[in-house]
Amino acid sequence: MTGVAALTLPGAVFETRLREVLRSRVEFIELIGEDLVAAGGKRARPAVTFLAAQTLGLEAQDTRWSAVTDLAVCVELLHSASLLHDDLIDDADTRRGQQAAFRRFGNVVSVMSGDFMLSRLLTLLAGLPQGAALTRAFGEAASQICEGEVLQFQVAAYADYGLKQYLDIIHGKTAALLELAASAPALLLNAPAPQREALLTFGREYGLAFQMQDDLLDLMGDEATLGKPVGGDLREGKATLPVLHLLDGPHGGEVREVLERRAAGPGDVARVRELALLEGAAGRTRGEIHRRARLAVEALEALPASPAREALAELPRREIERTR
Picture 1 (cartoon, rainbow, N blue to C red):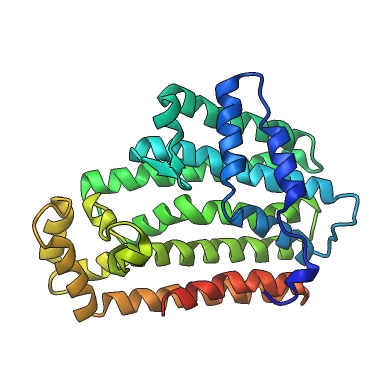
Picture 2 (spheres, rainbow, N blue to C red):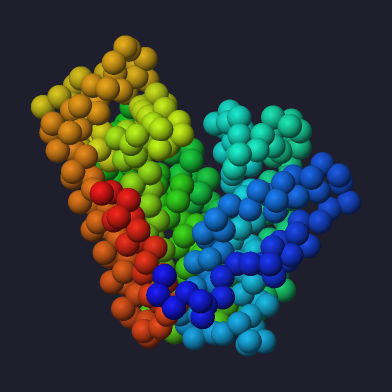
């Protein structure tokens, strides 16, 4: 990232604050919180919040920076709570290289610990400037995340595949939280409406490009690189963008049958991969990823040029690089 050395990103101060907020008098909740801090991860969403605040002109020396740190902690808590719930829904074995919380502590502890994180973020939001507006924004994002996850199961159950449903799903799964991470600093700092809208657009388009790329890799990626078998979405009856393109093509009936039997037949995944190449579905998906990434970068042009803006712009550009 250009000028990254001069920028403030999630580091020791962020991790310390996250640990403070997750502190509990109940040992199991404390242990799950410690696992979250110890596992780390990329802290990609808090990083977007930090960069967005700096794009709006705030510096780490400003007295309001502690509020930005708390806001980034809230973003991470919402993300982590959703992961605790997702792991249980998906019957996952691991998360960030560690045993999934529900495997270690049981379903009730895992779900309630996720709810504990949500309660903690609400408490934090209440003490921030523009707390009411921020609470509304977080509540709306949380509802979109829930709707996206449930809609994904509903579409698979009814075999009601379509582009609108797909975009609604990936908006809820990924883009809604990135919209929030990018635009919440504009609410906190009471930035002009055009600047908040620019950051909203950036987060949405970046999030859509990111999820489309993950979906493409799930079908067309290399198993050794991914670290898991390809075709997971097909096995769950999920019609991602390259598959939707195939459903509209000459082999649509065949692909629909694969989806409806959850790719249970021998060679099903390999056949869909082959068709995605032959019919250009993979290429069309890459084109849409590029388009969404460009829209994200263009949205930032409404904001003053700065190293922070350039660092934000690098994030969707990476999605273009990942398609090559």
